[in-house]
Length: 235
Ligand code: ATP
Image 1 (spheres, protein in one colour):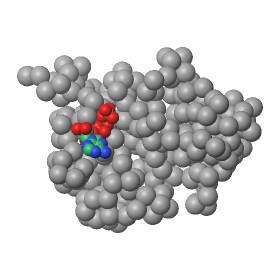
Image 2 (tube, rainbow, N blue to C red; image 1 turned 135 degrees about the vertical axis):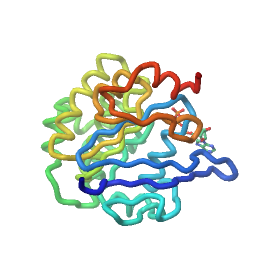
Image 3 (cartoon, helix red, strand yellow; image 1 turned 180 degrees about the vertical axis):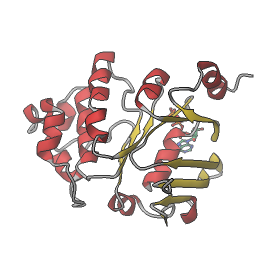
């Protein structure tokens, strides 16, 4: 077996005195789609923030292609090929759709993703390319956020609750784009409140509970009972 592309060992994360993650161990193989589930406040966003460098951690706690990246800044992590689609999208409100996308590509990593390819994935964005990003619907804004991350040509894309607050039909459209994103071998970690969705698109799943991993398993075989226990801490 080749080494995992991402290896997390004993990850601890703090907001001041408050500890949000307690010694997490997690791994991701190249090309794998991993789901992270768990109740509100379990630490899912904190995990993604830690991987993407928005929170700094012990250097050795996160290894990417065998190199310690836990203490790197977000821009340095992005240069290594890890892109985050943040919770709440965080678009640049004064910029157009196309300008937001172009900003995503500014680190200049080579790869298959370009404006053309993002527009092929989400044709509505080409129609709206000159509009202010904030004039778009929530679902379209989410597409911009995903497109912006893809423009960095990452090897790993982190999705933080991309379906939050969106209508079911829009969520379906966004998830329909996922195979086209990971087809070329890109790995993905997906934080998702909707367990059915999370299991359907991932090969493996981790459940977090109060900053600890309460369950890990293959998405296709894990039982609903086990997930309920891991999710809510019920015995
Ligand atoms: P949600 O689904 O609500 O986003 P989550 O699983 O992503 O939940 P996190 O956002 O990672 O959870 O939060 C983990 C813990 O850290 C929670 O107890 C939360 O209150 C706390 N926390 C998150 N952000 C901060 C912050 N900026 N300052 C202090 N505590 C924080």
